[in-house]
Image (cartoon, rainbow, N blue to C red; front, side):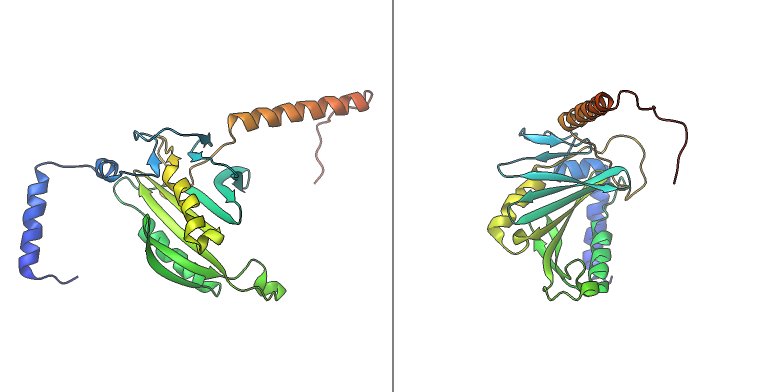
Length: 241
């Protein structure tokens, strides 16, 4: 990109001055962050949150939280509030650079590829995409339902990237959007210290209460089946596919 020589010289002087106090990418990101989403190492405000391991999500009246799966791994969360939905996915990112610019360009191409439209705009977390995408199954089933509004948001954190997708009423209604935007602001990302390649999903887990309830239910079901079939043969080492 061309520059006027005077501007270039001033920029070089500013960089030379900055060298006297080096700041790492992580330190710069942390110092610049005055609002959420938060890193697990931040001094973030307390509040009621659901602990999903890699994400801690704030909860409110009327919230329903679901988990999305890839294979047998939990890789995302969905927050449902009235007629709106918020999908959240967290990924590993490089130490000294964000990936939202790249991801945003990829999302724009994907929306266009399925016959949708997309516009880049400024949002509460910076650049975002406002899109209209065909409803699922519309092309194959010949449905007459119009394109669905969707907002794609992204936040680069220290060694992580949080992608948020808002759909439903909140994609076009600012009052409904504010509720889900506050969920994004209150989210805490727990990246962990283990090495992860960029864009690898940060794995989530069921909350402790849900795991205990599922284990108890499974034990009760197993006990009930044993009571109904006391003389049934146990499992054998064989498999039929």
